[in-house]
Image (cartoon, rainbow, N blue to C red; front, side):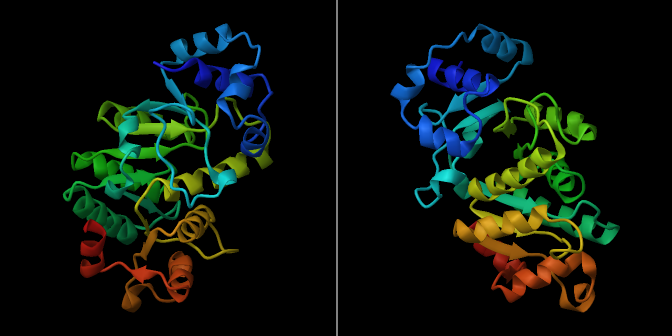
Length: 278
């Protein structure tokens, strides 16, 4: 179930009254201001029923706890979700895994081994349901009987990318969670890009640590992993990168990894994995 307050916020977004996180925190940051809204919520309520999803807002008891260190304008205020919301209650068990959209066979094999080791130690895998490393992380987690969280850059029933719709369903069926901030579809390319970047911060926000598998450096390719790693640094999360100097140095697929190492990020090793698990 959901509260009337959450339903009003959802309706206000659908009706264009709340246009962004900044406008929410500026104009509607108290429950009284939400309750004062005179809104017909019947269509929104029907869409929730028809879509078979749930909602929760920042004024609800079940809304995930957010660290006080997180800047207000980064804080989500409404989540639309399917599955086990409790997976966001204790982020000490959550590790985010991010990486390139086009990993090669070696990167894929190495990532699968890392995720398998984490899941066997009762870690919940957080990622973004994107192609490549995100999908590998979710699938390896499910294969090993683990629970995984996918933060979406899309609405809950318009999975992006569409090819991962069945993967999203599998996540929910296996007591995982798919979750988004977005009640309405994006209207243009610029908004699509903004949502991808905004999604990246949530992976860092709701994980104890973040592992970069592989990614191009800025200007050479993927940027999502870079955004997630930068937010993790700002949120004081543990950051690690997969990197083998003898095989990966100079490989463009590990350009971001090399940059992160220069910025003080630890290289993922057997000992550093043990640190994550502790």
